[in-house]
Image 1 (cartoon, rainbow, N blue to C red):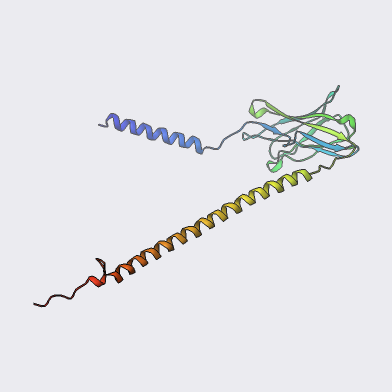
Image 2: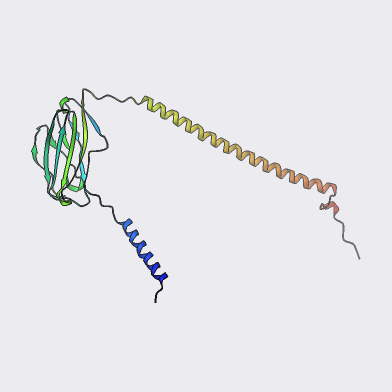
Length: 228
């Protein structure tokens, strides 16, 4: 009959196998909405601007509902809402409160893009825009993400001169340090080789002196064998 040690070893193997299986299983994330990495976007007055929004869910979706809202200094309103039947369907718009808005993107081929295009922007359009998504397939789980739109007269060009100067100085210092380290290693290598050659010369010179002076261990001390 198996002993306690065998049972413990078998239990440890099963536990290890189970933990390994958990690590190998793909991570399944719930509904998530994203409006990109930038928290603020800028648009020139009277131009058009794309407000990005994508969503993802490893559980898939069915009869998904989405809408966009605008929150200004003293105004809050729903801009557009719609739905998506499934992964093979394009979004359908049910309500649109601004004729300047059009729905862009597609949910086909796992793009899951429900961005909107706002044309002929005005200074009054400055504010926070929020994209909402609700997925009935995940027990009506809802998630949203916001982005701030700033309408300006003209886009200001960013002067990167200072940044370039700093990068050039840092790069030069790093390059100088690397050069110093290489020179140091080279000098150390040359000195080491020089010392080794000096030692070899001293040993050779000492052996020659012993031979010439007939010191013990030298060839001059050797005598012919005695004849019997």
